[in-house]
Every structure is written in C-alpha cells, then in structure tokens.
Length: 242
Image 1: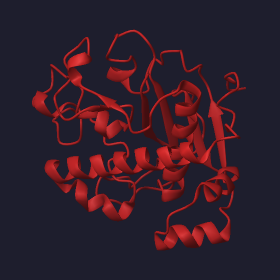
Image 2 (image 1 turned 180 degrees about the horizontal axis):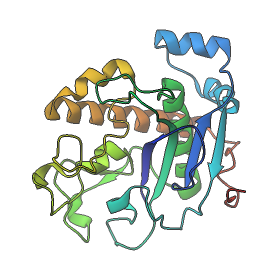
Image 3 (image 1 turned 135 degrees about the horizontal axis):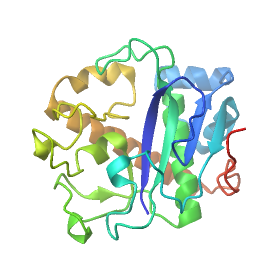
C-alpha cells in the first residue's frame, strides 16, 4: 500500500473522489498563525491544536480502489491489485490558479501541509507503513519510469513523473507538468505559493516536487514517532455524503 497526497482543484466542499478529504473551515489559533507566517516549525502538539480548524472526511475503506484519485497509481504497483490510499486537501479552486501563482480563492497553505502530514502519519500508523520508506521500481509488475525510488508516501506531482504514459508526446516525463499531456498533474509540487516560481522549468519543478514530498515524509515520520492517540476519524468506517 502506498499513500498519495493531492490537492483538489475545487472549493473546500467534499467531492468523495478520494479516500480522505479535508478542508479549512475555522480560524487557526493565533499563535499557530504567527508561527506559520514566520516559517517556524510546528510541534506535534501544535498540529493537534491545528486539526480542529479543519473538517476531515473518510469516504472509502483503505482497502477500496477509487475510480479517480491517483488514476494510474490507484493500485499498488508491486501487485497491480491492492489499493493505494489517496488523500486530498480541498483547495486550489476558482480563477487565478496558475503554476506560477496566485493560487486562487482557496489556496493551499502550510496549515494544509501540516494537516496532510498528520493524516499521512495516521494512515501509516494504521497500516504499519514506514513514512520514509521506498522500494525499487524493479519490484513493480508494470514498468514505471525510472525517476528515483517509489516512495511509500509521495505527492501526486511526484507520482506523475514516475507514471508510464505510452500515449504522451514525451513519455520520459509522464503526465507531470510540462509533459505535453493535457491531463498533467502538479499537485503539491510546491507547498508554498512563494515557491511557485520554481515550477517555471521542468528541471526546477522536479527538484521542487522532490523537496515538497521530502518535507511531507519527514513531518509524517516525526508525527508518527511522537505517538498518535487521536486518529481524526481515520480508524472509523467511511461515512458517505448525505
């Protein structure tokens, strides 16, 4: 099982396309807002205090294969059958969402990034996954593109440039941004809008995507090691939209 982190190009309203979706609905505590503004690191206890500002929905069992989500990587590439888990921050919708910024009416923020790391840590706890673990592409039943090891936790942007896409004009670039594929994905290639300029070329975008994924993996690992007592509902049965 792998975990893939997304943003959804939507308003902060649940769409039930992913196993887990979350949206910012309430004010963030003032001291945490100040810490995020200065780039200070949040502690595990800070992340716990951040969580009530968000609504979290679990729409599918983690053993269920979604219809959309990560598309080509909805199944674990090692067996081609078992489900991968996809989680989405409901943001990045509306006009003005560009790879170079601005990021629209509901932008992705570092508060969302910490929540994503917290959710990933909880899935890893429930499924005995190593947040910083990976495996070699030679273990796959299909032939992914050789762009580094396949991480247990990755952003959709990272998954995209490792995904085989035979019909794409530039198959060595998968369906990542600049691939020539109109259905390209750059989800979480940059965690901060200030880093959007790094998406201006293919090479710098790849480096930025690796850095973003590395941040999520490192923080998920820190949160997992700190111990988890509140699973934010991820240990419960899925709840369908009313």
